Length: 317
Ligand SMILES: [Zn+2]
Image 1: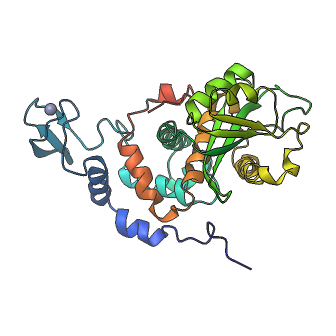
Image 2 (image 1 turned 180 degrees about the horizontal axis):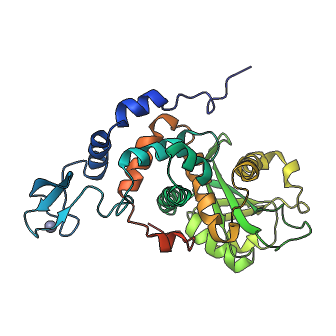
Image 3 (image 1 turned 180 degrees about the vertical axis):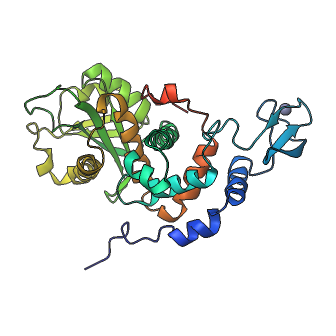
């Protein structure tokens, strides 16, 4: 049997994690490299001339121009967090290297922290992924289909019931018909105007959009270069070969819900959950470098206060 290219790719081993990021000093140095790859840049005024000093065991950079004093965490996702960076790196490792999503409860056990801390860590990482993915524009030929989180496909009884939210899954295909990038976007509804707005933020204007014929998708088709609907009855798109990829991605996205996120409030946190799935699919061939990549994303993500996290919002970059 041929090996699955994605499943058998080498990831980062636990030994490598410990070897590279086992101490606080190693993690601080890695964050410093990720944040200031060409050396210190003052977050207040943009100057590079600086001095450094140690206070309370922490390294501070003092800008020679505006005298601002900052640590490497200031202004990043790790801002104001009391958690050692070693724990943060372990969380990044667990979130990126697990085949399936890891729940806040599992994170609590693995990191040896309280549930509330684990929840904050998990949601801050999801928020960073969401922000990174927010600016992705799909190009070329794009297949799109509507689906529901926390429920079954459109048209089944209970549509619009509690804890069930609609989303659009879109897959960009190359000339050989293989999937390149995806977007998973939670929407308030599946009305034409909503889908047109979705297309404006998710698709390049040159896109050739193909859907399974949900009538309101034509409004999305109107804002891109070309639109084709393969018209079949609702819930029959799974029978069509052309929708094979999109159905696979939707199924892969929904499977962990049953196992990992039993009590997930989709209405509130669905956007972050979808962004995590999107982030992982779009980097599915990069398992080994994913820890470093997510660290880079965290270094460039502004702080997320808990009050903001609890609102379930997603910030565009
Ligand atoms: Zn400055």
